[in-house]
Length: 403
Ligand code: PLP
Image (cartoon, rainbow, N blue to C red; front, side):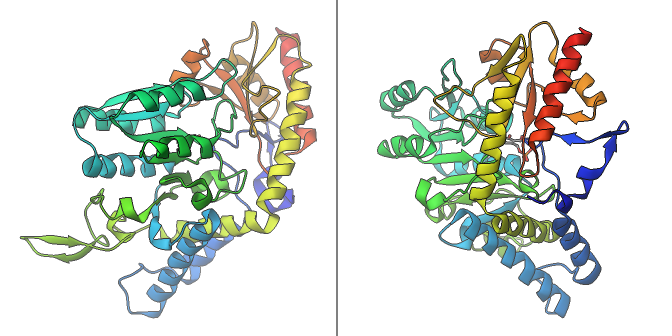
């Protein structure tokens, strides 16, 4: 892995080398992604889809090539199943609105898990308020796994569940959910599944056809791409029946004051000028990780996570959440040190140049389930090194001594 591709990694913070371990929040950008954006603004920029002129066609080509790159990356069947959004959050809000309009009625249920990010809770609550639905929750076990047998019985006991919405990887615990099994169990009852892929796409290969998920959401900025661009994948058979989420330009076929007809997929869901520079930059990021190889990235991050767990466990009073021995997790480690508030620990690590995240990580129900107020979270990306893990461990030891 070439750290030199990421200019920001060579900067200092408080005169110390930056150790960036907040990758689950957002990743740093390789030079090629930033340059792709600059190049497009300097040389190509024009609005897409509606121009006959050279630049508009060139920008449109880049935008539609990006859709094809995303399709290939997650192995969707057709690029009309790839909807560009602003990120995972907007993808799930779009789905909640449009799926809710098309397929849900008062008294219906949405099944989510106890380890969801707020982005996969709140849109369903808003929909529930609007439509009089009920939200059901799959509990997790004490070691941070989805309780599969309870999930099975919830599925079997209710005939009202219309959608299951589960994260692929927990952004707090690093738990990699058995998503294929979760999907096939829902399908046995005829229920479609949304997978929140915000924390899986940056770390390992995802194949939506192989998983057979019905919807899949992810964010560009967590996979070395720009902020403000994301993806909702959906099976055509559902998307075709769902109404638009927003109205405006691009998403229409014909407009009169009496009646509007909507554009075909995926444009029906993409009102207004899209972030065409962002989509091109996202495709550049995807090409970047694919050139390294998702398997290589996974191997590197698994080694790093195992090493970090081993080293962190040597620290007195260390409490690590999730990551049981028999279920190797993803490159996210949440922890606390008994007697030190997570905010103090994070702030003091920052003074040593080490960027970690503290708090509830937008997963308050999960944090409550763990019986705590928050954690310190270290999360790794392809460019992190064992030396940075050592810096984290030494930093924590230093803070412990101060207390
Ligand atoms: N879902 C998960 C599991 C996440 O970790 C995040 C962000 O941290 C999101 C959803 C929301 O992503 P975004 O803020 O890019 O929309």
